[in-house]
Image 1: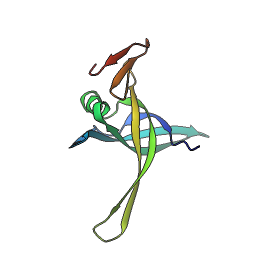
Image 2 (image 1 turned 90 degrees about the vertical axis):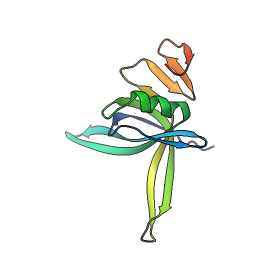
Image 3 (image 1 turned 60 degrees about the vertical axis):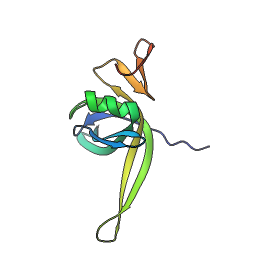
Image 4 (image 1 turned 90 degrees about the horizontal axis):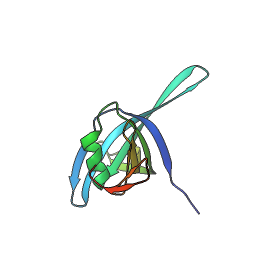
Length: 123
């Protein structure tokens, strides 16, 4: 059995960028996560992709600085650069999004409130 799952809590480094495809929308943004060890603070930057209804909600309600909790999986992108070399980037493909400061959780086109009630999107 293998598991590819990641949980991130952090702040958006930019407003989500939306791209439209035949299969739906993709929202992309960077997410900063920070930790402190022995008085020294370090920040990691993560590339995040959200899809479908979750992408629509992110583009509508999130902005640079928003705090979110993302659950997703790690994906490795590669491409050919103009100089002929390969480019690589680690991306988190989000499966669910929780906007902190808001009581709703978005997952697979459904909205889950803190009270456990499920509503169809949009909010």
